[in-house]
Image (cartoon, rainbow, N blue to C red; front, side):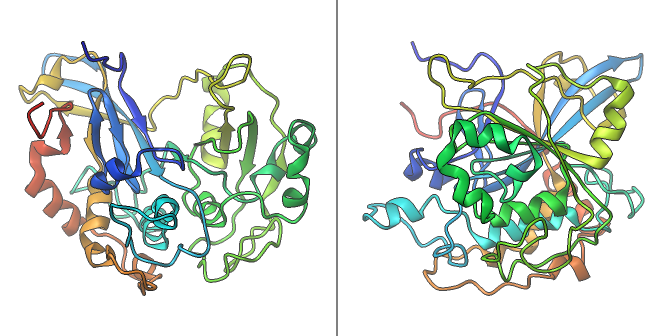
Length: 359
């Protein structure tokens, strides 16, 4: 019979996936039973019951954002022009990240963003990104960990580390804009841990000059000179306890990249991460009232971003001109959230995989 993932799994694309299949799920979706693909860029909520009473139950939510692909400056500003059958060029450019997707994710860092699941919530509540997942590393992250040990394992990284060109400059901007609690990556085939302590620099930087290699500041826009470098020794899977969790999650991003999945390589680590949001919800008679396993739910704030920027999705091989400050001056508002929730209703909760075509 067919194999099924034993636990709920969330994935992004890198530079070695079947791009022709993943391209059909640009906005994300189930690629197999129990395996959810985040799309070119996406946000999803993992929900779980943590307590129940007579008329209500508590739901903990882990908010996960993802960015698929790797950075290449030649294709960054272009539309998604690739389509099968691919030639030698499009076979590679199809997995290169795009400016459009990065700008959509940046909208999540709007200083006036609202609680994405509660249409009547105060407009000054900003939901945290608990986990950010990308394939390549944010540029500059090597300076926030044990750089010497990294260069011992990968000495050919030295030139890029010293010139601050190792990693993705667009992801570097997202790191400082979104300030997620955790950032997981891969691509460079080495286990590396780091901690980024965020300062009080203003957000809303632009990425007009991604080619800049200044360190430790961002490419253009405000300086992050208050960012401090902190090394983090391997904790072998031991997570921070509740006494220091608040300090860690509010001030820092904890970065982890793992090695290739090969014998005697550091390719796996188990972490326990609590959701940043816990809501008391009235029982509605849905299957989730007594469900003991986690389930996925669309992020209504993210859907509002996608709806407003639908015209950014173009198949042109030319540069896509977008309003880079769109969400700085006009962030998603409660009316947009309410409209999404009313349209989707229970459809915000994702059921599992089913074949679209009979096999």
